[in-house]
Length: 567
Image 1: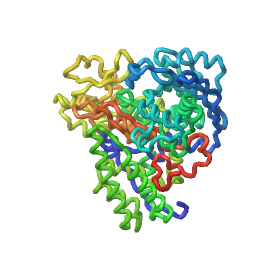
Image 2: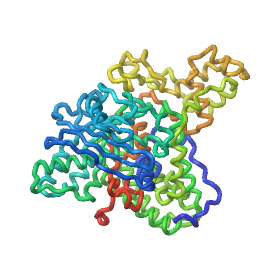
Image 3: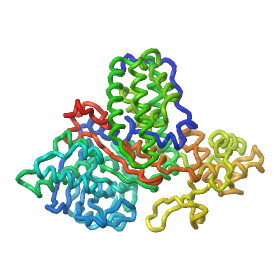
């Protein structure tokens, strides 16, 4: 499609002071570089095999199942435990101690002794202990109304009602998918050299993908148990309408601050992809046709996307209006002329809301997999390599860096209460990040270093009394409290998208913006905030199931199929 598309003069990547603002990051959408899509492309390309190795679940929905994925060199197994959970114990909160289903992703094919060990620990989640043979630990709860609707319909020999399905979009939602050494699981370093895990969060994305398969089969199993004479399986087109839901809260938000190199690499890859497409001198007829088709599906996606949160309701209204404007622009020659994608983006900057602009960023990448997809190889990070501080850097050089990267923070009056109204700390009960009210709660003594803007301003103020030519080693011997901020500043000189360019402890900070930014890179859709601190999403909605993966024609499943083309 793109062989004859040549670039003359590379378009510049968008500057970090534009991209790394929380309002924009809170408008990011999934794209070709989202981790779910990276995983499915790899598994399709490499011809992964899948099998259900065990399904020992009774008529009440209690028991265990094992689902295996076989790659070129390694096999991985989702070990799932289904439970009969009383309604009063069902909760999305991290403090819950029981769930409808619990899971572990096992490295290899488990033997009975492994399953017995996991059965004694996985249902307990944090209260249990897993081993280095496990790559992730997770749990999920049913969407009760939709789960019962689906089981009941299938038991009667009917398919679920599409409108009812569309309103929720998942049968279960996870409340946590833990990996990278948590609760005894394998450390990231133990699997980082495997090609299938080179991109970020691939083990966790594999766990969720297999969980989706299990959940559909569990619903079908319960329908057969209820009415063996009339029950039917779910139609392929219908089952693709189900993803896996997820409830995510504050625990995820600080990740964007504590992993600056990794976040830089995610966003730099996306910005490089956008720059490559904007550099193309023309849009071929094939590329235009693909874009128009996916734009129509993005319109459908926005129409199906529901939320009860006032902030998201407003954003959805803006997105729907933006997509109408975008479609009119394209229909009126918006892709004609030289460098049409660049012109279209520049028009969007002047015309559309942040929601619409960022939706366009994702859409323009879609026709150009050959330009975009290999950038996923650049999205991992060896963060330890950037940890060392260059003590030979001079005070003058550091001052210049702080002015460049944190100039916005130097203009804030940090003595004003609204500027530091919030305080990040870690709860003793669950060891999870929390956001307290600094002047209303006794949390300041437990504050975590999650306000780079304020810390940069404090460092800058303390530099005033030092010789500009003095090395930072001398400064840090006298003021070691600034070590973490000096490190961040030096990282930001090499990794331009490493730092959020907003106040993360201000009275008006919305943690859901940080949550959405990270979850968009996972590939999540249909963000539905329940407050400014937690959000529900959908994962893998529309994706092919393992038995369909080899025959999937396009990597565009994140956009809903239009009614007239559904099969």
